[in-house]
Length: 98
View (tube, rainbow, N blue to C red):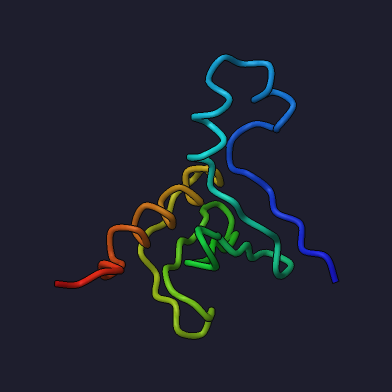
């Protein structure tokens, strides 16, 4: 099975045409559709989920889905993906401890 990832901002073709392509490529948040109304957000592995519950998108941080907790509700899908990544990054323990 092949997993396909999407990015929250623009397409690769558009990024290649802009002067900020290298910077944009490193900061884009990847997501993939995992269910009818649910998307998994990835940052070195799955970090959370966005669920479409009209008229909002519900943001969850954690993996797997049954263990994730709700952190926000927003009206824009791309902002929801960014919120999940931002909160997941800020809540991670440091990789190296003294």
